[in-house]
Length: 416
Image (tube, rainbow, N blue to C red; front, side, top):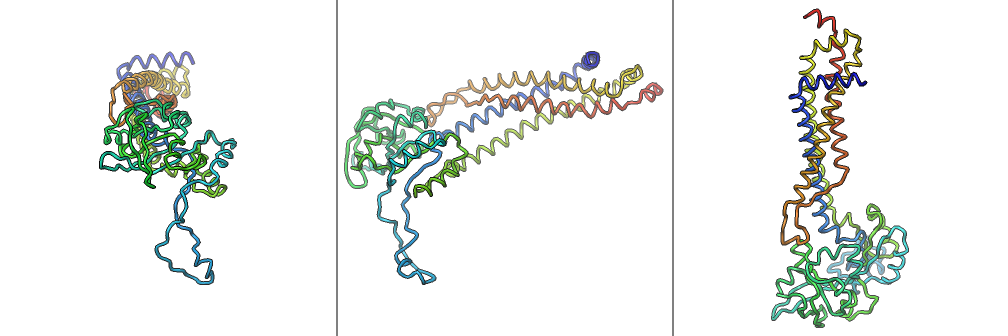
């Protein structure tokens, strides 16, 4: 084998320029594959994170809807059709019954990572003669920080102030700008029942979605319960974070039947984001693989030309005792040397290009926590790139090597 490798490197040096061109093709392909996949998946993580980081895996709530069974259905069950107009939802509060008990049961479930309550209230902010519509979400602040990255979107203020204060609120950036409010400002809030309260601004929240930042606010649960004049057990939502995200659809159906509530899983709630990520991933992999295939064709052409130019050397090798399989191994080794050399350089340059992209400033008012372009440094992109590159170069070298192994030395020497 050592002798075969020595002959392969000799042939490589004889056609050094063409071999370098082939290796550069592999290097360029792997460089672009690694950089493209890292950048596209980093971008996917950024875009999906705007929603997915803030979304529970399973959300339990009580949706206001009309009763499926009307009194006439009970009074006259024998009639085939009942025609009813202007059916109204049931006159009940949008709260979860036995919410505390449900949370205790979920907390003991081995599939559940975290359970956090939420109380959502529709309010108006009174700014002079103008009333601004908004939604205040009462949250367990420290759980939101730990499991939903609440602190990443808090551009001003400290979440501990929100957790400790009984009359504090965090405003969305768009809403704060419209009100001219800043840290420490007092804002007047009116509930749907007409009760008014004064709250102190403890922070500014910016999710990166302008429409949400114009209406969304946060306070601790006790503040919102006090705002609505409700008891401590009054909750409208329970957010569930699972240890395995893929279990969310099945568990949502299970919990809906078990507790008699409405349940929404993260896959259903954000199907459009997952579809966009899948499409971008397919495009990235397709472009990278095409680049590697093109590099493989370059190696194939160069080896084919080398065989035609080195027919004499091949004939001499076979005439001096080298078998057809030995010749095939020589040209396969030559192809793999090109692939390995180009692949190693491609991985290095791919990492350098990723670092370069990661250092490019990316400043936008919608994403204050992002300062440079996002890049994913997952090692699997490097493994996929070098594996596919070696496979491509081996296939590209197999056919010319097979042709070289079938050369008849008698015909070549007789022709000379």
